[in-house]
Image (cartoon, rainbow, N blue to C red; front, side, top):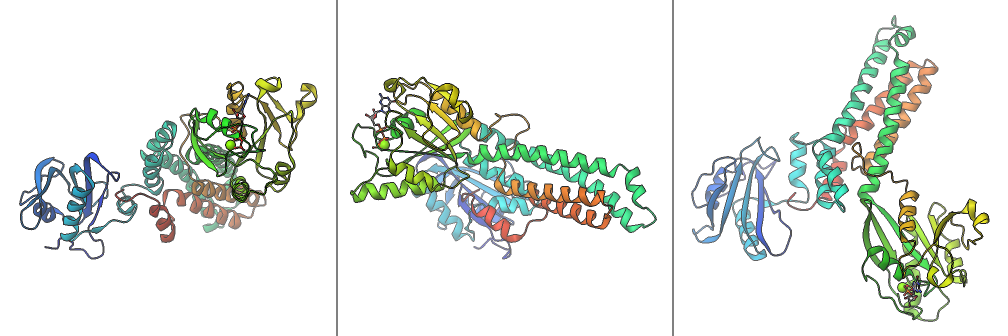
Length: 466
Ligand SMILES: Nc1nc2c(ncn2[C@@H]2O[C@H](COP(=O)(O)OP(=O)(O)OP(=O)(O)O)[C@@H](O)[C@H]2O)c(=O)[nH]1
Ligand SMILES: [Mg+2]
C-alpha cells in the first residue's frame, strides 16, 4: 500500500529522538491523509486525533515489530500543518530502524534535516525567526540560551520585529501618499510628524541592534585561545577555567602538542577555549606541527590570552607569532604563576600601567596577574573576558539572535539613516525607496521576503526529525 497520495509533498518520516539506546524512541511522520498509514501500522486500528492509542506496531504480515503509543494529529492542527503521526516505541536503534523501514515501505520517504520545521514554516505555523529558534533551543549551550530560544519560539522576537515593521509601514504610507498626491507636498509630511516618526524608528532599531548583538553572543559565544611559551601554564589555566583536568599538565616544556578544545559558560555565554602547543624554536616535527596549529587557532579566535611568566618575559617565537595576528583580535596579557613571582593578583589596563609599576610584554590593552595553580585572580580573568565582549548580562528584552538577523537589522538601520538624509533634503522619492528597502530587510528576519536558497541554508542546519 502506498499512502503518499500527493507527489508534490510526499510523506516524510524520521527518528526524532537522539541516536543510541533510550527508554523511548520516537518516529515522526508528516504528510497528507495519514490515517490509512496509521491503520496499516497498528494492524487495523483507527486512531482518534490527539488521543494516545496504545497499540502493537505490525509489519505487512501482521507480525509485531514493537508496541507503544501512536499519536495522530489531523491537519491542520499539527506542528507542520499537515497530518502528523508520532510513534513512541522502545528506544533501541534496531527496533526503531525496523519501524522506520516499515514507514518507508508504507510510502514515506526519509525526512531531510529540518524538513518538519520547514513545512511548519511553509504552512504558516511558524515564521522564520521562530523556526530558527527551534534549532537554537535544541542546540542551546547554556540555560540562558535555552530560555532566550523559548522566548523566540513563542514569538517574542517576531513580535518585536513586527512592531518595528508596523511603525515603518505607517511612515511609508504617509510618504507614498505624498508621492501619489502631488498636491500633498512636503508640508503634509511635516504636519504628520514624519521626521519624528523616522527618528523614533531609528532609535528603536538601534536598541534592537544592541540587543541582537548581545543575543548573538549568547548563541554563538566567543573563541578564546591560550598562547605563550612552553611551560607558562596554558594548560593549567584551561583546566582552572574548565574546573576539570581537561589537558595534561606537566613541568616538561612541550607537553601540549595538539590543540585542546573545551567549552565553558560564563554568565550564560558559551566560551570556547582552545589550549595550544607552547611556542618556541624547535627541531621536533610533531611540536612544529603543533605550533602551526596554534597559529591557525589564533586566526579563528575572538580573544587571545597571551600567557607570560613575568620573570622570563616573552620569548622570540611568541613575539614572532603575535606580530602576524589580525589587528581586530582582542588580546589580554596574563602574567601567570603569581604565587611564585610575587606579582600582586590584579587587573590593570594599559593606561594605568605606569602607576601600577608592572610591565606589558605585548601590545594587549589589558593585563591580568593570576595563578592558574591556586586559582587566585581567576575571577578577574572571567570578568575581563565578559567585559571584552561587552556582555551586559541576561535581561528580559534579550533574544537569541543569529548573524543573519544582525545583518538584516544593520541593513535596515543603514536604509533608515539614508532615508533621514533624503528627508532633510526633501528628496521624498529617494526617502520612499530607502524606507521600502528597510522594510524588506526587516521582513527577511521573519521570512516575509526570503529567497528559497536562504530557506535551504537555514533548514539544512537542523537535525533530522525536527
Ligand atoms: N606555581 C605555579 N605553577 C604553575 C602555575 N601554572 C602552571 N604551573 C606549573 O607549570 C608547569 C607547566 O604547566 P602547563 O600548564 O603544562 O604549561 P603549558 O603552558 O601548557 O606548557 P606546554 O603545554 O608545554 O606548552 C606545570 O608544572 C604546572 O604545574 C601557577 O600558577 N603556579
Ligand atoms: Mg600545555
